[in-house]
Each structure stands twice: as C-alpha cells, then as structure tokens.
Length: 238
Image (cartoon, rainbow, N blue to C red):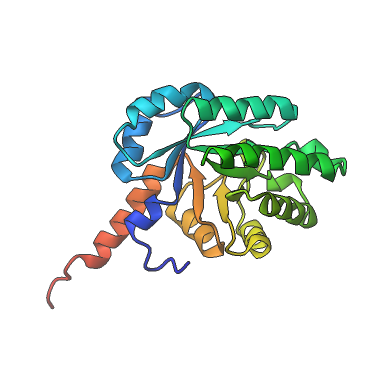
C-alpha cells in the first residue's frame, strides 16, 4: 500500500488496539475502549475474561472485540484451544487471535500443527468470526514461517500474524514481506509486537501488513493526524 497518502480512517481501520499486558497499563479498560471508539479502530485485542465488559463499552460502535486463544505461549492442548475459542465466540468475540503450539512445529509434527490450525479456523468460520494465526516469527526459520503461512492459507484463516508481543522481538518488515509473498492477496497479514510509532506502522504497511497489533494506537493515530494537519495548513505569504 502507498503510505504517503494514508488517511486517518485508513490507518484506524488497520489498528487492533491491544490491552494484553498483565500490569503497568497506562489506562483502564474503560479508557481503552473509549479511545478505540473515538479513533474508529478495527478492534480491541483483549483477554477472554474482558469480552463482556468490552462488548458493553463498545455497544453501538463498529469496533470489534477480539479475544486471544492459547496466549501467549501456545502450549495448550488442542482440546483446550477449541474450548477457549468456542467459549470466546459464545460470549460475543468477533475475532480470535490464536497462538500456535510451536513445539509441534519445532518437533516436525506438521500433521498435528495442521490439525490445530484447521480446527480453530473451522470453528471461527462456522460462526462468521475472523481468525488470525500467530507465528511468533522471532523463533522460526524462514522456511518454518513459510510452512505455517501455507497451512493457515490452506485452512482458510483470515490472517497470519507475526507475534504475540510477549517474545524477545516482534514484527519485522522482512517477515511481513515473506508472509505476504506466501499468502498473496488471498488473506491478511497482521504485524504485531514493537509497533510504537507512526514510522513503525508505515514501515509495516509498506511491507504488506493490513492489520497492526499495538498498544500505542492512539499515539500513532495522533502522529498521523498532526502530520496531515501540518501539510494542509496554509503557509504564510512571503
């Protein structure tokens, strides 16, 4: 996407506003949802325990409520992940971000990994819920990243996602380009982890991301707003 002409609504529609840290959050859940609604973000990314509260706070707005599953490590059994997904959807979640079981991938158990991803995607699809598959790219080789993307694509997932934001490093432009090269335009690519500024956001968008997971959504949105205002303000006459 050409980022030089990016509008505020276009940016806002890409932001998954994350409220996932266990402590040290600079705002309450109420403030978080109010900010998401005011900016028109795509969704709030939350823990499953907060679904009902966010649905109440965002009632009457187009902002989606998205829950994480198997988060952040992914080392749950498939049965537990299936239950988490069904429970979150039953309680009103519009989107599911599921962390894969990396041990299956690293041990070479591709069949079990395929089963895990396909099962969660199938549950989401049967309820018209958006599915996102998290890779945690910092732990993977390029070929492993390609493999997970191909599995997610074949399963019919809506997005592949770089990171949880809890690993040693997060989204990198080169990983976004790699993931986009595998999935083409047939599914979305979400960059998450370490996106703290407008510069970070634009780099990810230019690389091919069409969703951005970040807890810095408002400051990024404000940066773009200020940039647009500066460009449109009339210049003083000489």
